[in-house]
Amino acid sequence: MLTRTAIYEGTVRDGREDEFFHRVRDELEPFWRRFPGVLAVRVQRLVSKDDDARPIAMILEMDFPDQAALDACLASSIRPESHAATEAVMKMFDGRFYHLVSEARTLLSEG
Image 1 (tube, helix red, strand yellow):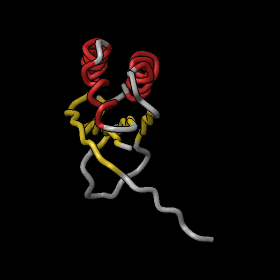
Image 2 (cartoon, rainbow, N blue to C red):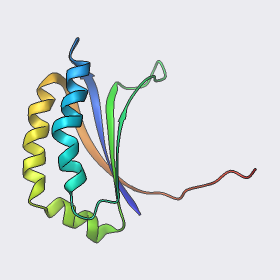
Image 3 (cartoon, one colour):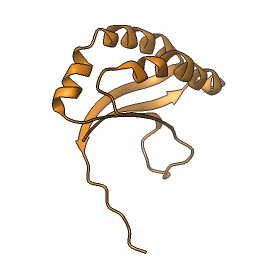
Image 4 (cartoon, rainbow, N blue to C red):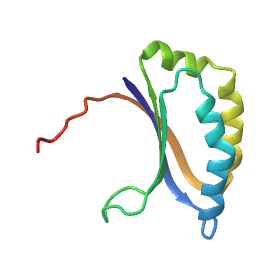
């Protein structure tokens, strides 16, 4: 399984946090759920961090079964619509977002 992660590095403008995250839920999440091949979507809003950590407002993770599914998602006709909606919401955000693709193993603790 591959996970494509979007890191939203920066801060939501003062007093706009609730509006920002409501718009993420109402305007962006419907696009993310519609992408072809996506197995799971996780939207994470940070609640705390280490004092020396970079400012991260949100993390988006999308799981795909393999590279072919991820490639199909990136080539999807939904992507330009999603990007345009993201740009509109990002007007409340000071910073940048970037993507990482990772492959993970799940480790279970014993006991």
